[in-house]
Amino acid sequence: MTDTVVRMPKLADTLVEGTVGKWLKQVGESVAAGEPLVSIETDKVTTDVTSPAAGAVLELLVGEGQTVAVDTPIARIGQPLPLGEVDAQRRVREPPRPTGPHPPPPAEPSPSGRGQAPPKVTPLAARMLAEHGLTASDLGGARRVTKADVQRYLEQRSRALDTEQRAAVSVEPEPLSGNVVPLSGMRRAIAEHMSRARKTIPMGQTVLQADLTDLANWREREKAAFEQREGAALTYTVLFVHALAQALKARQQHAAGTIDIGVAVALDAGLIVPVIRGADALRLAEAARALNDLASRARSGRLQPGETHGALMTVTNVGSFGNLFASPIVPLEQIGIFGPGIVERRPMPMPDGGIRIGWRCWLTLMFDRRAFDDLAADRFLRSVLELLLQLPQDAHRG
Image (cartoon, rainbow, N blue to C red; front, side, top):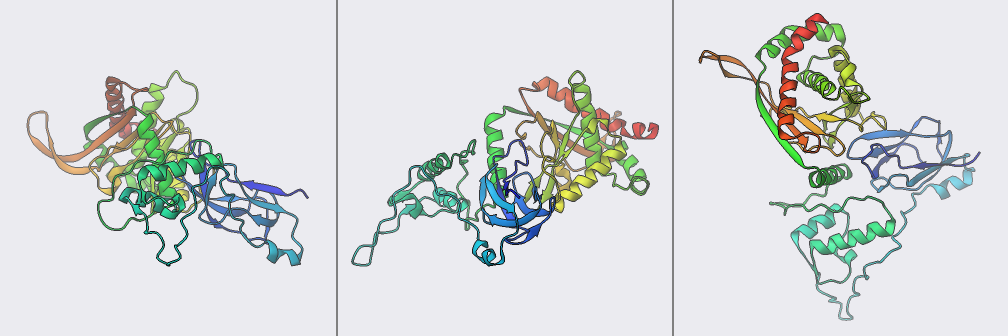
């Protein structure tokens, strides 16, 4: 049996690295093809990666908590080890050391025992060092360490490791107060992804105030029967997803392919955006079941590779947390992000100048100006609203 090398998978188009969260098998243990082997954490998803072959775990090449580039070997699967070799192999090999330029080693203490005074580190440099698991001594014997020194060291290390497309260290604001808490691998990756999007996408924003009274009243009447009949909740999120998919279908009517919609799912560790494939072809009930399935598996860490990339646009329902509206960042390789706010009971104006109690929602569209100009974005957002208001009639006809 030839050994099988397990490599860091590419779980999304925009990802260049991943973090080993937890090894589910140890050296010497048997594993079946398709059995969970390791939990991988990225900015998009935390998921269990299965073994590509049956056999025994011969070697774990990357330790838990370590981040490596996509396609890096992380384990070997092969013939079961002889009993005497299991203990010898039950270890995690240290990752390869950079082969490029190295900072000089820290100065040795003087014979008097006092040594050199510790270097002065600027607050931003200290934060960057903590985020990347470094200390000032890693940068050599400089008497003062600045943000530029840390950036230069990280760039040298990245070149030495030959990691293509690694994101440049993002410039972050000075900490306002308190101790600096290092970011997790997932949150650091999210920050770098958003930083690249902010720098490379010319973003625009349009917002409108929507009267969703008729929609809210219809949903209130139908949601219990809908859930019992369809096995999924009639949430505002699924209504927003359905309307957005139909608006994109009308806009893309001459383009080939289906409309895939990302839906932001909040986790304690960060944000995951699983994708509903072919959302434009789904009936409302089908979209509700698809959303329920993806959100459930996202929260339990059971999303599969490929389920978090390829969306044309994303829905992030900031209203589910009680927010009035937001200005989300357009994800890389998408044309926009739709951010509805809370659907709240408010006094609403009437055509005759009177006031009535109704249900209001602020709808926000952040868009890539290469895909929409301002007028086109305004019209597109208006079309999403019209499709939302049309949903009760469409559901009745369906």
